[in-house]
Length: 504
Image (cartoon, rainbow, N blue to C red; front, side, top):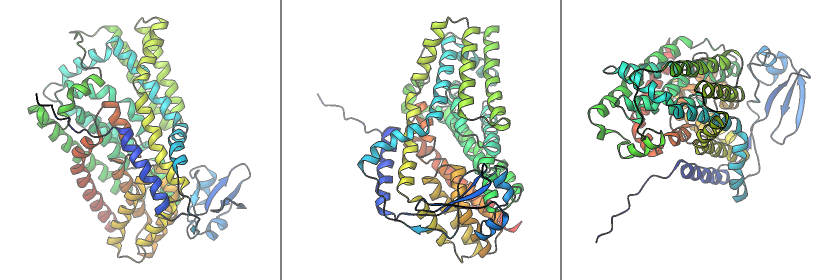
């Protein structure tokens, strides 16, 4: 009897990140170490603190004259009112340092340190898992999904457009990214029930967030903080970015809808067709559930509380300065209220909540492992070297070539520094003045920065994408296969919008 050959499978998110972790450690031996001096504002003493690469600090008066002396173009008021709150790299201060290669011990400790640094995100994920567990246990999601599928039958593309647009709007205005983790286990079953596959659900949420962040309009964590660091107003270039957002969302929706319709006609054309059973099991859709013709009043109240939770979360983030701690507490309280309305006993609520949280332990650990890559690069002192090298690429270039290379540089930097505010404060004070030398306005550099970061954020393992895919049990290679044509389209579109911004 002939033995059946084992089919090769793509490695898990953990293995992918571990490979990236090893490569990052190798880079700390290959790329020369170096660092810029940084500038921070001490609001208690009302002085500027300069920290040089050796770690020595010096205080300077918090005046506009000091900023001019340091060739920092930002306004003093942006420091004193808290708009610029992260250490800012000082142009012209880069120095080479002794190589600080990250060895076996550092590689082993990096994931542990990564978990410590992302514990707030991980706790938020656990609270989401607990709440979703209670909703599934009560059967509320099944009833809601069935009702929505009946209402939207024949016009399912409206759901794709609506989800993509709303999340893109959140990404453009306040950088909605990590917050979308709560949507995947809820919305993806809706898309599957509508005849699509899990990839359509992932794309509507993740691509919506990515295109929104790529064309940020008033996002305080990217375009606003970067404009402050460059000494410009975030409203400069805003009309072009707003048009780019509208067109970018339209392009993205068309791409997703075209794929979704092909899957509806022939499910075998799905990129994740072979994984259908596994994905359904991960989402709890493999269990036979009774579909109700009429939704009970109790379920309607619970769904109302559920959606109100998201409204409160968005309001808290945008208007009250909430972050992961407050969001986690909100989901915890909502989960308990939903359990009580569902007439669950105290022990039942606790047991189901913990069970739901445990389903997302793997997702939470992926976040910590992704952060470990950044930690290795930071400790290896290579991030500033990459910036210093790339800033040298664009000196004296033709303006059009300058902006193309600038976007490519931000794509590369975004892979290693996948934090909008962190990349802004490190790179913009160095990159923005280079625009002056080629006769371009600095707001074009701001757009190149958000376009590059948004593009690489679509696929970089150091971001959130692997955690998202692990939540649905989709491998990274399947995502790359689905999204690479869209990424090419976005790249060309981003370059076109940069060219337009130069000449309007």
